[in-house]
Image 1 (cartoon, one colour):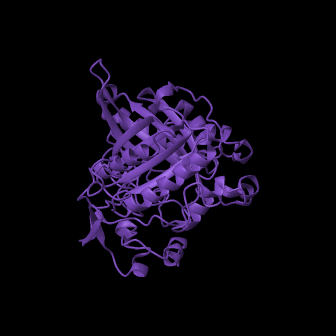
Image 2 (cartoon, rainbow, N blue to C red; image 1 turned 90 degrees about the horizontal axis):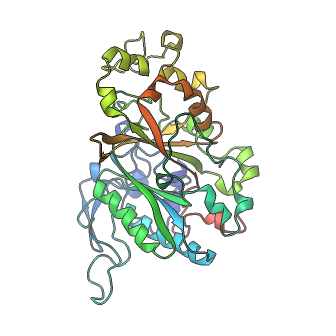
Image 3 (cartoon, rainbow, N blue to C red; image 1 turned 30 degrees about the vertical axis):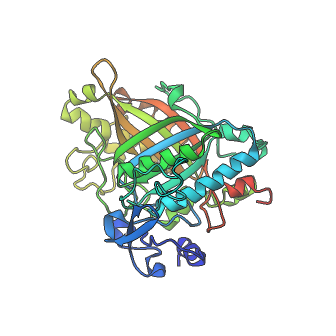
Length: 423
């Protein structure tokens, strides 16, 4: 039995969403305990079982937060917040309110008393745009930024692994798309479900937090489902073929979950959590589209059709790095070139219109989870300083967050291990 399944079994009032799937692998964690797979639609406070599959819900409770090793959904709404209240108790109450709302929304239920039927003289608890929609595998994942630890007398609880990211070669960061005291990553198969979730959390947090920046994403660019086809980025290439799968328990423990003896000594409240790096990477699409196929393939170190590494026939063939050009992206990013450094990727493509000069403002919203930012993203990114791909991309936004462990049960709440003194 997995940790998530154990937690679900302890839940005295389990939600009716029951399907936690590993996609094509067919491993449905929690489904057996709940008696089968169902999906619901939001109809105010009435939850109607409908057909399962695409609209199913993902278990909210567990040792780890959903939205990390969970099979990657199709859409993203990511938001970074600044804390505006100086009242610790008020902030903690907001985290509890957020948790309650997240528990309902991920189950396909409306927030609070719903979007209608209440007092006509008061705003409804839920904004209503997700009424009638399925849970759509919505996951909500919260993280705490370095700046949060300067507030509420938390500096001595900041983990050593939560370092401020250094300046990397080629960075052109926009402060209005960087940083944040905390973040919420909303992933779902329906974009309106993801937007609804962030909108309602921001509404609940009014007067305590304010959105600093946000990003919509589509077309997942990585997969955590074993043996699934690797999605393509907006350059048309497969990247991240050997991403960590949600079923690879050993690799998750080694590279993603903050549960080592070192973490336990430094920040025991992070046991079961992870560290998130978010980077907004703009692609110079027009320049790339005028580049020859051979150069494109040399830049990545893979062919564009199959995605096979240089000299190989299939995408998942083990790459022979010396066969690639010294500045090929795959060669420089590969764990063998970075002392084994490995991260879990959950990136999405984005397009935000044009930049006023007729150029598409598009690229990759890169999300990477790891056990230690210093040994993960920083090590790899420094090695990518000579990456041939840098001619066609630029990092324009950046943030790092400590992602606490999962919400254990109905009485638990986001951040309890950090804000509870005995933790």
